[in-house]
Amino acid sequence: MGNSIASVDERETVDTRGRVGEVNFALIGHQESWRAAADVLAVLRGPEHAPLPDDEIKDILPWIPPRAVCHVEVGSKVGAKARGIYIDSFIPPDHLDSAYLRDNLARVRGAAQCAVRAGAKIVSLGGFSSILIEGNFDLLPEKHETVFTTGNTLTVAFIVRGIKKMCALEGRDLRRSTLLIVGATGDVGSGCARCLAPLVKRVLLCARNLERLRRLAAEFESEGIEVEIATDLQQFSAHADLVVCAASLASPSFLLGRIAPGAIVCDAGYPKNLAPSAQMPDAKVFFGGLGQITGGMKFTPDFHGILNRHPFPDVVHGCLLEGMALALERRFEPFSQGRGFITTERVEEMETIAARHGINLAPLYNGDGSIEECVHTASERQY
Amino acid sequence: MGSNVDLSCPPPGECAALSPTALIWQDVLAQALTGELVAAMNYTALAGICGDPAEIAEALEHAQGEKGHAAAFAAEGRRIGVPVPSNVEAKHWKRLREAFMRRIAERDFIGCLIVQEIMLESFAVAGYARVGRVGPGSLGKTFAAIAAEEEEHIEHAMAILRAERDLNTARFDGKVRQLHFEVMTTLAEMLARECVHGHCEVCHGSCVKPSLFGISLSAAELRGASLQQYLRTLDKLGLPGEVTLAWVTQLPV
Image 1: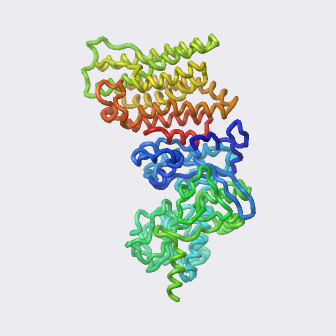
Image 2: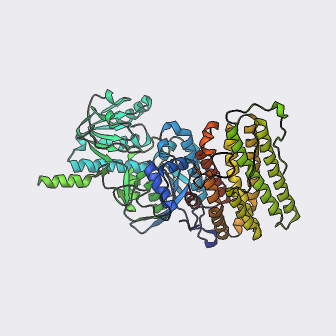
Image 3: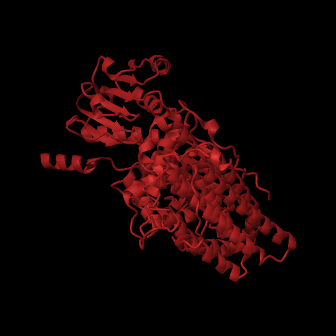
């Protein structure tokens, strides 16, 4: 990398200008941990240099302006290819909360400007960037050639698909389940509610904004769905055996006493912080909203396993995959914008687009590793 | 370019009594003053390789402006009751000066602008701006005013450098890369949290860096702000961000 002066800030391939080709998509992200940030900087620094000490990284990283970090090339199972860039907003991992809202918004906006300058046709907002921007799209730079998507529709699709798969693996009947959605009025939470509520026996919706909860509940009540709302998990009258955490919980202990033994818990929040622990020993926790590219994904320089830190290859957050899928489809449109507009039909449409290009639900796992292997092993032991 | 910095100083009798932080400020001012003198020498040398009379005049005017900044820093020292020494032969500054003079020897006008305007001035602008925020009274105002003037220098040079880059991007970026490792390595060592290679030969006693907290600054903050300004300046020039970031991560810490 140190010897390269190839650019990702240009569109066309012209050698003397250091240009490297069309930018179909841009992915805006950040690192979830200092370890991940250190790994990113280590790749940029190159193998000939010793890694930077952790305390130096903590001093330096907050000063790095948002910028492209690498090129990404993805393939489709039908032979299509799309080229993109990964732009890191360099939000410090310990600033991923509302106390740093202003600075973080400025960083995401700066990253968006990088995407516009690079000529990206579609931009996916990953992780915390998506959460920050879903209610603030007007803060993004306006440029008609570049569109932005939160990527939340594909995230919802993979959460829903994951819930269904986990129920199948565990031999649960969705129709008999009581579903709890934490963060139900957010874009992802309300999308999950719309997709899953008609499939279960009862829905418990939890969020901080009571008025929004009432409006969402009214949608379901008009369809004859049994629904209960609360701003506090402890207020629900029933235990949930199916949980979607669409908002990060400060601690798994918040779920204690509100979930049935053996409940299936989808950690779809960001960052993912639920794990089968001493506090929830019986819960079947899995990380939701993740997909896998089967047509190949290449980073230049090689950030495999660093930008996508998952136990399986080519696994990426659904929000980022949405931009890639739309780029492979050559549908450069702001598929997911705003909050509360995700419907079952839109989820199905996005899932179909993704599947056409070989972008499917990732193998299920949690902080302890693969779940599917555990389930298979357990069922094999029974025989 | 004329300087707007106030060079006046109250008569010695009116200077404030030595404050507890005066010796910290003395070292901060000494580094700044030395940097301004090096810049003045650089612009004077640059005038010697300019062909166009207007360019010569401009380079000499810049040199004069930098001398004015140096005088302003010396005046601020007098105001707080401390002499402000300078040492353009101090090891880091000498290396920076030598790097610049190699470009002069090659009659490389663009290389000179990259070293002085993009690298040295980026660090001056960022450093002075941070000092300007915490400096008391006229001291802070002087740093802030000089930061603003230096930023104007950068903007002026940017137009020339962008035009040069448009002519041959690969050649231009290659030159910036070479100069980055030649010059920025020294600047990074100067701004490292600790001077691991011994005394800088500018501070009057031991290294001032550990004492910066006494004036609400830190070496880490000055380094961070300087690298940020440098990266943003390179961004404005159009250099690819992921490449310049890689360069910066390869600097010594």
